[in-house]
Length: 639
Image 1 (cartoon, rainbow, N blue to C red):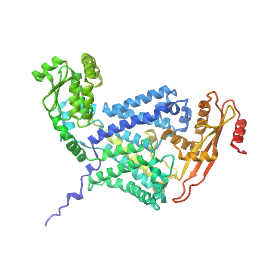
Image 2: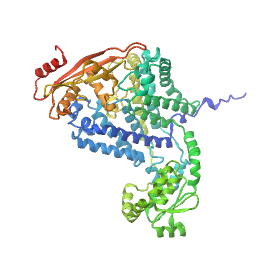
Image 3: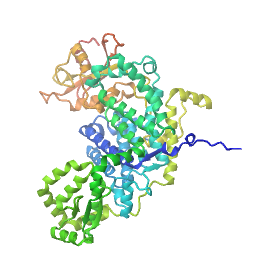
Image 4: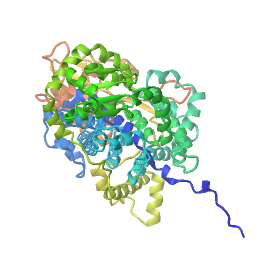
């Protein structure tokens, strides 16, 4: 009697589903560092406003508003210099992350500093910030520096370094761990749980969600305004976005037809994020999401990329040899670092003393020597240009380096005469390493617990699911997860409710008429005479936010939850506003109005604007009655 043979296709290799390629992880590491630096640069002009006691959110109020599990290094001191120092440390950590220098430590430092920044200025946060800090957390437990990094370059076994970068079978590029599964699941959780929260008919039935999203004048772009009324396009795109977010994460983790679904999923989600970039001004969120897609590209993609794109110049690099002065450890390390970051994986590095003619040239020129694919020997800056010329990516810089050779040679000579000092610095900061260390078993067990906790948190953010769980287990409606304090401490509480259950259906903005110390009425954004109702209404079509951080702050200022923030905003205006033409003229008091214009139904005329006064404030040295009476009179109000 024969034994039935079960096809292997029925039992696919699940390892490929949750593994990440170390080359993709390296590029993801670089992207994370660049995004962190971009975020710091965006925040920098308003550092005093958001991160010091002299700004809009003093520490005592933020500490009171936050819960006890939200800790921040920015709470230690309220001076702007302390905030600037922390931001500089954060920038240095991001640079170290890009270079892969002490990668795990720099990832941990970036995570702590970013979380501290979020807890110090919670009014500025958006979904992209939550995703960024979550990806940094999972990255702590991944071998982020295993490829194309300073850490990987300084492995003492030079053969191991070359084999690692070349993708030797002894050092495979695919990495599988609990942390690799966690970071992939986190990246897809953004879309999957967002789809479940999009319960409005605008998404699931009539397909008007994109129409309403593109009519939000505070975030739409010029491009969005050109096609937002094309219902024959917005309706099918709405259904496409919802189905992609709902089905895409399931297919991308399919053990069958993998990696095909990964390729299709990456293409679909990247195109979605590019659509966001073109149509909505939502900060760094799309860039962060695109960076996460690098993790889903399978090893076959990176293999083909190396073979097809790097092969022409790679053949030249195969015959490239770099000779250094053997007693100089600093020189040797520099050669290895250049080979790593110029992507010259197959280039050989040898001591100049191994060949008599090379040693003679080194002594004569007091320089390293590079032998290119033609056999030509170059020294000093010309040698550096030869390395760049052979690089598959940075070859475009070779002519610039060659042009600057007179200056470069002088710099090279200065470095050469001080190489003993550089050697001592390198010995401390860049020591050789015996082996590349991966996160251990204990770290992975901790990640497993945190992954279950984060997924449980995301599940309970879906109202229908939470209600079913509460009913099934007889829990109280306000029951909390036991791990909630830990999740809050680590800044891993997340709700992916972007445009859910449906996009906002109205534009809202603040109008702040103020009374000057001279008794005039001014509109505080420009200092011009107070505008009429008609002109103020027209402001909805003008970009009035300096950046998306300001937009988040001012929009949240109008909500009841953040009403206590209004006193600090008004106080700051009183202390800092001066008339543009007459700096000696300040404010006596002000009103804050929240104006709203409901987006019309498709095909209908634009709706009128409604206004509601949400705050009144009188500045130091002035009385409430006096300021209120004068403002009411100037605004033509009876109250």
